[in-house]
Length: 220
Image 1: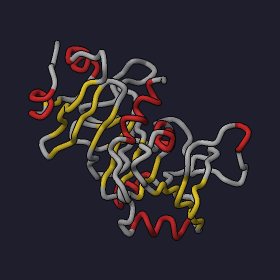
Image 2: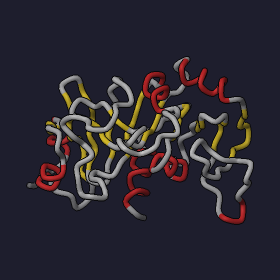
Image 3: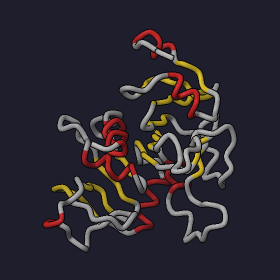
């Protein structure tokens, strides 16, 4: 299992029976393959599917079945199809329980940038803004640092902000942070990761949650 799969598996543990879940482009799409067998959720794709299943293998790809990121998907028994307007009405109407989104950056209070890179062409904002504003809970899944080694959890955003909505949970390859009114709270370290490494690789300030220090050993 690579680190992106590890992040997806950890995010899947946050889902509960009956949740309607939207999976964003990138790492979030992998979550479909790691939903616990005893948890029944309904995966939503903003191009008009409710009931997305696991990723198909090469022999079972149907070119007519793709998610919003144009990746092949499967659909479960009882799934439904509808137009984009109806799909966004679900999102804007507050019917999505959880959205799992990838990011370019996330700031010290939990706001994200994930739709545009300065200097590069942009096809459109996609559904990220709607998902942030309309979803009941938002989980971020991302590598802790960029390909250049820079922290993606920053004091201030340098990329265009997606929404003023503050996310609820950040899951990276190194750690998990809960986002509270007073900022970021470290609640979990990935196996083999030290607190010192998190401090070195996280630009934004954070606190160590009481639940973390009581339940786990923290080593610098």
